[in-house]
Image (tube, rainbow, N blue to C red; front, side, top):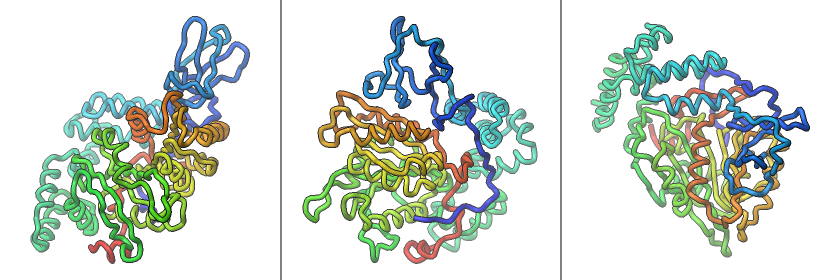
Length: 450
């Protein structure tokens, strides 16, 4: 599952934790509890407090119903409680609220300067220019000539360019489309190569919504892969989108695999309709997911999706429920240099904790405390190891829940994913990294064409 790294030249920055004295790697908002009996604070989530008791969750879950692993502290032992939001996490929270308002985004620029988030500062400025291309303060901060060039080339900042690209996508004749491509490059001073335009056009022809039983094209002559695909209506092939790989649950009945990508999507679909994830749900060729026969299929599938859709490679995630949760624990740590986050729902794991920590890969865990089909023991053990290792993670266990997974948990996981980006060599990749910018591979040309 190796892939070519993006060419250099995109601004990145190594982000140090902004919360003082934090030994834990968690980049989530957290409560810091100072005790009267210790200088070392507790870090996690305070889920309840009153005059007598403070309920503290060291696994960073904010759910008050969770009882496993939770500490009930006498109020007399608690000296102080304050909320700490790491700056890099706070940036995404603030950005989500500020989008559409150039003035609010300029305030975010000030926050980035104060917090020494240099790359995020430029990202906030670019969103300010998208919100108001002629905003004088934003243009001055960005640099007037640089702002002019950015607005001219960016479809979100330049409605004329967006309309021109949408119209270009409707040109069926290859000769006419090539001529119009040259005109667009000259008119808007576009930096994209012919391979980018070819991929964008091909991607524009892909169906929106849900497609079931889609056959794998990449290496489809040797790998009998089938998958379910969800593409949001908001997808535009000239804008990179996040990717979510979903692994289904189930098992095996003799030689028959129980479970499918079609079934897996139903767990996520309500939450996905409000978001911009492209979602791919393959059918396992054999169970469990860690079976060697599945690995080349997953690799070919991801390569196919990155060639057919404009994927932001800094926002790729893998999640699964039940058997898919165990599969997530296989593919997540093994290829942690690919994922910005992984989510294991009602399925545990026992490996890869250090690799996940070293790559700053976020881990979201959930289990029902009353799950008789897959008991929470493995998830609890994983949560303990993640806590011990200082990983960036959340573990939620709802005591009255069984094997199913509530929509609210899926919402919470996807909200957390939306604030997570890939880390490469300890550098957080804040900007988008389009899969359409790389040189087409031999496999892409062979199986998908130009």
